[in-house]
Image (tube, rainbow, N blue to C red; front, top):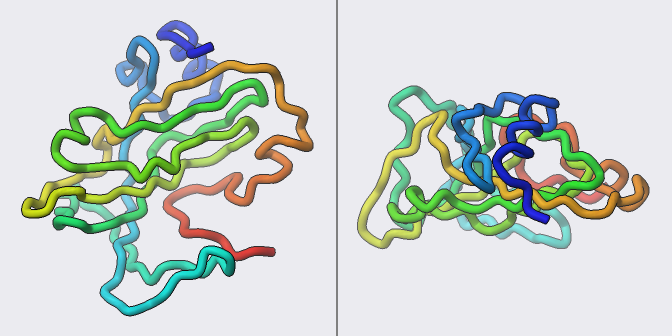
Length: 178
């Protein structure tokens, strides 16, 4: 079942979503906002290896109120302002806000927030435009979380037990295999 407005307000008020805003709650989603640090893909011939979990070559940029201008085709990692504490009976899906999508700003669809996850989300964004740049600023509403209630997942099968990014704050790259 998808959670609606009053249930989403409860998630804010009960601490499931920290640093969220009541004004960001819609009929069936909550807006999330761009944090103040991004990682920008470096100009290099580096080869990342998924199986080895090698990190990309990136440079960190602390955003000022003026923000950052994303060039056509540019890829960044970012984080949201909100901190999530997902109960074992909720999953969320992250979608790009339509107003951001209309300027070519796209989340790379790696947006499932599993039961038991706690932390700030690392977000994968790309400027999908071929010829135009756009500006992003800290605090911009960049995505929407849609929450689904389901049967409770056993602790041993949850992100609490199996997740590699629990507790993260700020923007994080892929973590190496243990």
